[in-house]
Length: 151
Image (cartoon, rainbow, N blue to C red; front, side, top):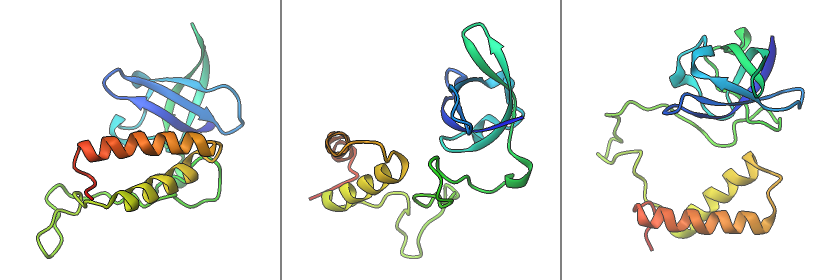
């Protein structure tokens, strides 16, 4: 078995990619090769798998969670052992005691940009400053269009 982290997975198309921990080429992942529920797949999730040679390169099979980490959140790629930002599963009906929906916090543009910057630095430390600024600007526009920020 080889260990690696899910890079991305498109549930509607049923495929994605895994980055092996040994730094070799990303491995193709198809939904039919999962031994875990598809809903568990997310970027950064540590998985174990067999590598087969597919028609277009390496292909993962028998994809499962490592026995030692089953049920625990994975650390982000790049080491450090800590999750860069908390991911707290919530029940869809969860509410704060004041009646606010905890999933609908509206941030100021500065707060939003700060959060985005911290996430980018933690999950993609190889981005240049210019790339981070471009991504932040695009995400801020997107956030404003969706009501995630307000001046």
